[in-house]
Image 1 (cartoon, rainbow, N blue to C red):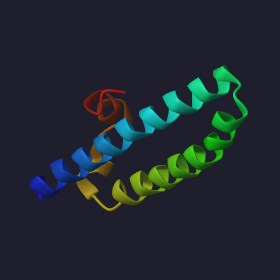
Image 2 (image 1 turned 90 degrees about the horizontal axis):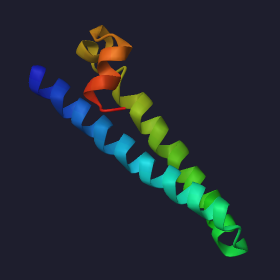
Image 3 (image 1 turned 90 degrees about the vertical axis):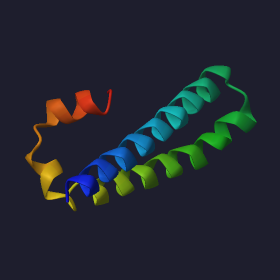
Length: 79
């Protein structure tokens, strides 16, 4: 079970790292004010929302993650 927890945490960490990329690209597109880049933000935001749903699906599925205080989880995930 413990191995599954670290696997879940690793998956969450990978997804959140991917979200950082989406956020950075979305911000860059917004700041550049290029119409094509701004239209790309719609897809990036959709993908971001999908990955947030994946994180939400992973965390409650693992009872050991539920026992970890949120602050400690965020430190472990380097957020």
